Length: 512
Image: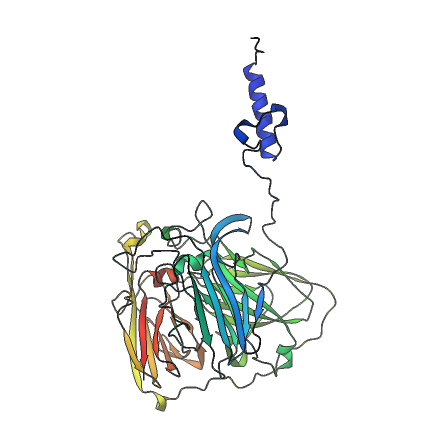
């Protein structure tokens, strides 16, 4: 047989050429062979390079109620997502993040068929239920809703396991507050991982400010703010991926990195800001513009609050009016903020002001807010809760399993009732944070609360919320709340989901 001799140089040159062809997605036709059916591309597929930033803002799909019912389905499954130039493989609702926006009215019913198409869990339940576990179990929480916490309603004690489908039915009362709400998983053990993956979406209870033309005529935008976190493979399969305080890679709006929002000079827009981040506060600023707040946590304000910066906590919503200034490009960004550790910073969106000016005005006044102030004479009881935490001697070197998060010195136990409250009670609660390292974020289900004092100092105007800050090193939050309409068991917890997952949650049972 006659073999043609190849020099080392010619062999290497040929290898480089072949490698280049493969990287370009072309077939190596010159070789003329397809060994054992293998593609000449060796599985490499040319994919168009997606722009990482500055694309027009895209809002989620909207699903609306009809004839008093919003009937829909949600599928939980893994999906590939291209986010800010990064390819992720994460859990999702309906293959995207955020999930669909649900729009309904007071007095209507939300009916969802939720299918859990995530794969089977690879672990069993741990001895310590406050060790994150079984990341593919899920359920559904309507954050901020005044609705039943029992049965197949807003019941976060339900366990929706992989391979099964479940019905959810949440009826809103006719007098429910109108505004911006949201949904997300709340299964203890997996909620943090699923929310950090992007499993969340907005709910709008329609009809607020319908009689205020300056608001009703403004273009409405939904801005879902979140923190993007992932491991080296673009996944979240280990709680250690989430736990470091510096885990956030970058920030997004509606699943986009620094999208572009267009406005005309003088135009007024209504922005529904929703912070779905799993862990950290965001100090927001729109360059050379003021923010005009008209509602917080889905509850209308009685007067416009104007500010240059706004601190929004995980779980909170803020409805803002924005009036565009002179033509130009401005940055919506998160500024440095110390919450015991540095909050994430960076660009959220670009606002491009251009085109013909518009003559629009901000409202001079707002209608009376929907919820009545709770008077001293109404209080039927008082309680105090203490948030605390433990950490290893060398905090920065510690593994997440060395940390502990507690309320009243106890970790969460789903079989224990921590507070029993009689239906119709009107109580004043004080939450104290003795943790020396972190601020915490208090949230309670089913009934909103009226904040009266922060750190012992009265607010000039008490503020209705469902999520609020409790500052570190002895800070306090004092609020009043009415336990109305619904009996059953529901949760209070820190909405820094790392902390909730590791034990900073309690049960409340309202009885008749």
